[in-house]
Image (cartoon, rainbow, N blue to C red; front, side):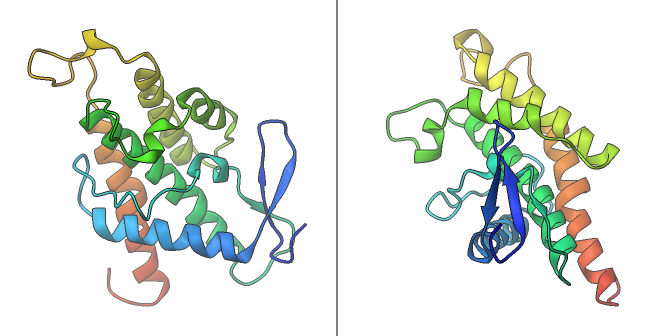
Amino acid sequence: MDESGFYRVELTGARVPVSFAAIHALRQDILLYFDDNLGEGINVLLPYEQLCQPYWQFLSIGFDQERAESAHYQKLVEEGCLALLNGLALDLLDQPPAPESPHWQSFDIELILRYIQQYQPASPRLATARQHLLRTYDFIRRFGPHDTNADGLLVGFDPAPAGAWFDREIVQAYFRWHTSSRGLNP
């Protein structure tokens, strides 16, 4: 394994080392997303030029060598990648497919779904996150003209409950945990 001791699990089951640099790049993306979207259940802000990593590959983040920050970074990356995947899905559903779409829109939805399916949540709360993502990405995979009305609005699928859940249970929970772990009043 890499000196960091972190790894992610590929769809084949192979462990791939994750460097400290990669962990910090993910951390930067996650904290930017959390800060920009605190309190936003559905209308998320995604700076495309910054948020462009394959977040689905890091749902399975783990570590072999425990260091002071290992558990904190694992939790942040796992939960942050779940939230980012929800944000990406919300943004996809908010825009019609177009040639000028951001580069991440060309990612293989089937591949993302396979990573979400392979993901083994460590708690019932994260299992709920997984279920929300499975439902949303399955809808995106099957998305067609019959899924919007004449005004281009979604019919038969409401992403708002999942968006509100991710905001409350992942994004806001991070800030509550972060302030309480530092002895600040949440």
